[in-house]
Image (tube, rainbow over all chains, first blue to last red; front, side, top):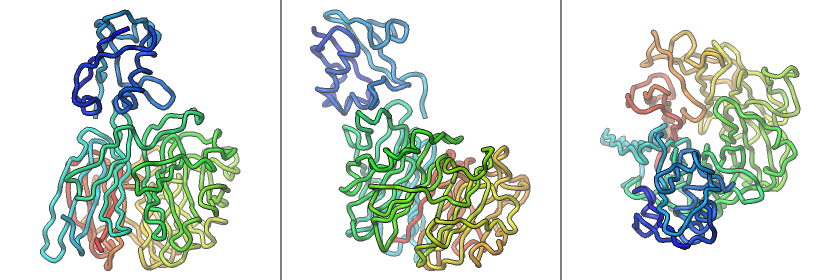
Length: 93
Length: 366
């Protein structure tokens, strides 16, 4: 299943400079998409997901414009052609 | 570039690192930074072993996590380990919050570096700080699940390595206490006998002391100084027993303690009013110095504000450069950096309006 993953500027250096990755997810949820990301782009993955496999506190994932925190979290289902965004939350240094 | 004779003062703040390089011969200081703007820098270290002139930084992005980076050109370029280099293994059931301390592992093993982190754990690098591995002996200690976080988090903030025997290591944890290994980290036992825990019904528990900082005395590997969460101590037997040396300080609460790099009788501390009011006692910025291993302390005030000065200096906010004469430097949560070139007799404001200062490390370049 092909999903389009959009990266913020800060993470593109860990994906060969690309801002959009076309990923073939191993399964049908955001969690499985993140797993696929870990295999293909570990530098992006470890900045988004901690050692426990949890999405970092100040990282948001949007599926077709909806924050997954208001859907089913990382269990949110994905469909062919979905647009997924990784974005820093409203916080910072 | 860094030259022999330069003085480096490395300042970590909640919003980046600032590197001060002074050429004492020509009286020039240059500052670079902020490095990693917006990231919290709780740990910095200078490493001049094996011909290096390397600065290491524990950087923490509130979005993307924490890593250890280093520079060999005083900040012109930094490493950026793409896959992260301080990570708990999957079976540890923990995730890194931040790196609190970076400590070289002794001259005999110039590639060894230790990182003290939150949640409280020790990591070891065998490649000069490129990659780190969890020290299992401490992580698996039966006390570890019962350590509790202090106000700053559950952190392993101090790592001391015996310069004569790098297998001998001491660490300090808030709140856990002091732990010591004789075998390079394989096994650990407590070394905080005599250090009180004022926040427990039993003020001398087996473990759980909130030790804020330990500083090793020069040339006497059995002697160390300790600033506690209430209590100022010295040991002369490598931590087997600690003695109260709060003789004449306005408060025995504080965070940092600094030992003289060549005189084991001399140390400095910065008392704060209390745990409930963590500001310089009586609204006066005073460094206290002992010349007799804690039998007495004298206030050092020249050049420091003495009215309405409510400063906070954190556990790593006070350092010395190891030079001769020794230079002292401390930074505050209100962004001032003070320095002394005469062992504390007089002080100068070196910088102000920096972000809140978390750590100050200094080195006289060889």
